[in-house]
Image (cartoon, rainbow, N blue to C red):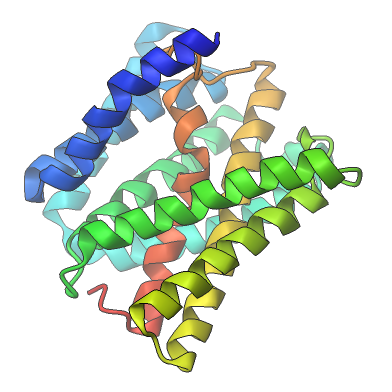
Length: 273
């Protein structure tokens, strides 16, 4: 399993880095769109569609909607606003699961939720890439580093101190200690970044708030996919990535973090649009 994980990472990492940082405009949108479309194919299974035709059909619908969104950039603020509402609602659904399952177990509800998970993540990445500040690549790195650093911090602090479970009905392995540890290390990285870049105290404060919200919502993104997988009775969203599960298993935290990060940058006026 470890060998598979390493080999898969060695293949995917260069492709991901090239796609994120060397592509621009329509090519970047197409690259991210391909990833999201594969995620849609996986989500269809979580929604209860076992037949390949139906799963491919849902992925095709998502691809068409991405093309529509690309041709109508004015819809971006509305889509990201819906995403913020959804992730706020999802927090409640996760923390009250399994009682909350009665609100979203129909296939129709799962299809709509899948759109709210996938489409805003794609839109948010496009907005970050096209940032008016000219720091699109840096912003993409920032949100990914926040999520990954928090995940690493949560793993080690959870193993060391994680006795009180965060959402045991959804993901028994996650603990409050892990959440605090991940959040703490992410805030520390933000502080160090502000010091290195010479930010004013007010800028550091804003950055800390943004970092905290992004880390917390990334945890919700992770737990949300876990909730849907648990309800569907599956371990991984697919087996497309040997040793890593599926695409959704790799990007679940980012689907929540990216659109919220984009909205926070827009609200605070940090040169997103």
